Image 1 (cartoon, rainbow, N blue to C red):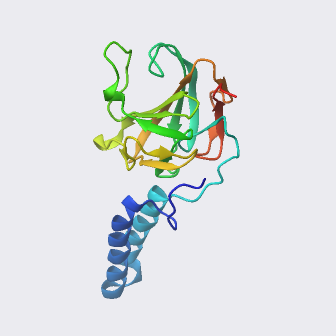
Image 2: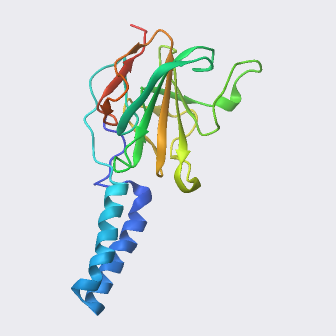
Image 3: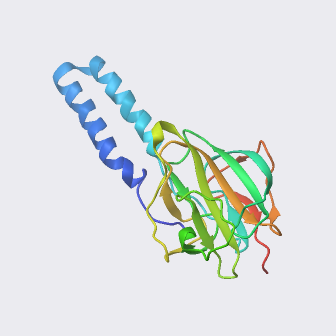
Length: 208
């Protein structure tokens, strides 16, 4: 599944890019080529920041794909993960010039972390994304390390279904992505490994 389609860049960045390109053109028209170089470089930088190319999603029903472009920095255990205790934890440092849009690690339904029954162990911020597969496996994606205080923004709603590798949120210059998986999942990456959003498998959930 390719996710939401767009030609080249994330929809959130299109208005900003249009302003930058228009500014470059107006500067060129009225001031000449040399003064227009700086706004043109700004427009090029914005294109790199907001780029969101299509990705080939692997045919792996049990697979967990990387939600972001980046480098794995931590593979370990979390004692308050995946809603009911110990879980695998994979932390990825996001590539600042990687794709602007995060992708869902697995196929499933978005559930509300705030609607859990009393007494359930939860240690997630409100912007964490909880996806439950059809087999009942819980996968949680969360982010931290916001630049300029800009937290990621999801464009999906509770109750909606996500495909594996489907676009689900704008990263907004966030530095780290963290994926929590059931403790009996199989981890396929190690620290230092580079991963590509939606294309590289980082784990497999346990259910056959």
